[in-house]
Each structure stands twice: as structure tokens, then as C-alpha cells.
Image: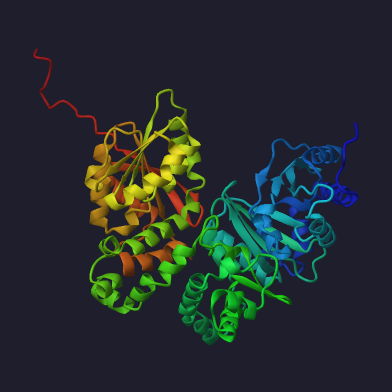
Length: 576
């Protein structure tokens, strides 16, 4: 039997990478990559990070060929590997491909250096069968070796250490070159382009930190580049233009009219969407600056980021663009008054809070509910939470209650992942019917619907979900909501809360931006983990722990606080 093998270029690159990983040490590599390091900087780096792996991207025709080639190079790889978030995105952008076509996986077979220290070869794999449309992409990537890099894993990372190491890299000529957080493995990568005088034979470097460090990553992805203060402030002052440009893009349905690969001229696009050609060209150039569209010789095409504004696309964020560019944008004009008075800008503009206002305007209520669903990717890892996994595997059917669960996006994911669970959705009456239509095909008869408010949390369930609810309310109302949950929870029950957490150290975060939004438009606030712990304690609950989710969110796990053991009164006995 003949087994097709990977291309000769892949074989040679893989063997060279294995040899490199086995023979290098941390301090020597750092000196080669950053020749300008002084002694103190080298020690600071070598004490806090270690050479962990070298990476390359290969293109096997099939999985069997990949396994055979790994074995020939002395590498063992078990399992299918983890999905690669960052490399997949980079490939899609570089080659103008639909990201769904690129199933990039990560394998990390182990090797040992001369001293017996364990390292890995990080192998990114994209299967390209003979005759595949991806053949040209593979040939280009083999030539350019864009994803080849050396990685240093940071020991015991914290925000201060991460910022310090990134600063040393930048000071010695390394240039930030992207990065990302991979929720599949709970790790954050910081990519750099090596200085021009680097001597290690690799153009790219990576700092890897276990855990979710998107707060530090945000500054890495948007460096200041030494702009004059006036230019920096001018860019900040035009942020409102960005919001309206994205809203106009959605209103005009440009994402539906544009293709991801083939460009369209402004004139042809204007005719299709009903717009003034020159004015549309101006908008398109601004959207290209934002990365929503890309400009080429044949006109403008849609990017993967821009595709999220398609109304019916997977993970559509179009409703968010229309909400943030619509009523929430209008009420932000009253931010000064909101800060002075303590009343939301929304209420001052529209005369009532946004929940009551949307209840009177069904079309806005529907758009708001869909805008909430637009951020539902933060829920993707949640069905794998140990609490839900244990409930799903229980011998007797367990019940999950989603409190104020909107259209049932989260509850639907949980029930679909765990067929043995039953669900209850508690929501306002006008939301229940839409949720029922959405959930019925997914859950069959395993979900019931309870129209009511927070005072009517169904008792006796095993798991309670409270997702993106508490940040809508002030502390007193949050305590009341949590007490309603605590009263409904049996002693064994778990409560999972999904919210964004304000960083304790004040570092950049989406939660900080949403804190301002909640203050101006909703009347609520974002909070730190310690703040939530205090609210839970006031309600007779305690915080067990919290874990990161996509989109800068977190899941907090809480349980009822055990009642203290009552000691007998002095002199009390058994009647002697």
C-alpha cells in the first residue's frame, strides 16, 4: 500500500525545526534575537521566560501522511490537535480566503534538549489534498514561511511582568506583529517581528502566557508608535465617526453587496445599494482604514471583520452596529448630563429607562434582543464548564434555570450539549414567545417557559444561570436579584454568572468601556471580581471561582453559603 507523504519542502523544514529545538538554550537565543540586550535585560528575560518551542506551518494531503511524517522525524502526536485561532485569522486575511475554509490545527509533539529539558515543536497543520483550491496558498506559505517563529513561555505571568517583557522586546527593536487569546487552550500569544540585526534565522518571535491576558494584549495590538500627543487626541476625538460609519455600512447593507474575494467598484456598488457614488467611495475608504473592507485593483471587497455585519451571517453583529449607532448613540450625547445628575442619558432623552422604552417599541425590542445575541460567542465554552458537565452526566435528570435568559441563546447551547438536562427559561412575557420559537427545534420537550420577573425564580433546580444580567443594575438591585436566586437554590445547587470583570489593576479592558455604556444608557455598572464576591456574600452566597470566556467575559461560579453550626446554649443539656 502506498502512503502519500507531505511535500519535500515540509519534510526538510520539519526536520530542521526539530534539530533547532533540541540544540538551543534560552539565554543564547535571546542574545541572537535581540543583539542589543544589556546584561540586566538579558537576566530579566532569562529569569522570567524560557525557550519553549519553534513553530512552522505544514500542508499535508491527509492526516495519515502527517502522522507518518511526524514519526519519521522522531515526533509523536496524539489526538487531532487544537484549533488555531490566530494563525487561521492571519491566513484568511493574507490570502483573502473565507476563514471557514481554513481548518488550521495545532499539534505540539515533545522533544528533549541536550540537558533533558522538555520542549515542543509547534506544528500548525492545514490539510491540502492534491488539486485543492488551497494549493497556491500552501506554495506561497512554504516559500515565505510567514508563521515560522520562536516562542518563549513566561513563567508565572502577571500584567506587570508581561508589560515589562514586552517593553524590553520593543526597546531592543522587536516590533509588535499581532497576537491573540485562544480560548480552546486558555493561552495568550504576543507576536513580534525580530530586529533587522537578529541572527537566529527566524523573523518572528512569540511571548506565550498561560491564561487570559487580553488586557495587556490590547495595548500590544494597538501601539502608540510615538505619535505626537495632538495626533493621538485627534484620533480619539473622531471615534464617533467610526461608530456612525459602521452603522451606515449596516444600514446600506454594504456587507451583503460585497464579496469576500472579488472587488467591486464604488460605482457598481452605489448602483446596487442606492447611494451616491463619490460619497460612497469616501465611506469605503474610511471603512478600509478600519479593516472592515479592503481596497484592491478591482475595487473593494469585504473582510472577515466586515462579514460580521451581514444581517444573516454566522455571529452577525449587525444589530449591535444599529443599536450603538442608533438610540444608544443618541443618548451618549447626554453623557455630561448623566455624569452631573446620576441619571442615564437614555432616560433623559427618551423619558423612561431602556427596558420600558423598548417594551413600547417592539421593533427596537427585537433589535435589542438580537444585539444581545450578537455577542453570544462569549457563551461558546460555557457548556463545557465542570458544573454543567457534571449535571449532564448525572444518573437522574438535572434541571438548569436560565434567569432573564433573553431569547434562550445560552440555554439552547447548554441543552444541545447535554441531552440529559432539562431547562427552564424565566423571562418577560413579550420575550417568551420568540424564545420558544427559537428553542423548540433544538430542545424538543426538554424546555419549559416561565413568564415572570426576578421575584419568581423557579425553586428546586440544580444549576442556575445569570448571564449578562447583573451589570444592568445598581448594587441594591443586584443584591435583591441574588437573594431571589439564593432562596430558590437547594443546598446542592450551583449558580453560574456571566459578566465582564473590571481589571483590578486598571489595565485596558472591554469591561471599562462597557462600564461607561452601562452608566450612560442602562443605569448599571461593570464590577471587579471582588465586588461581585461582596454582593454574593450579602445575598447568602459565596464565590467559588471564576474563569475567562471570549469577548473579555468571565463566568463566575457561586454556591449557597453553608449555615454556621449552632452551638448549644450554656447550661443546655440532655435533661440531666
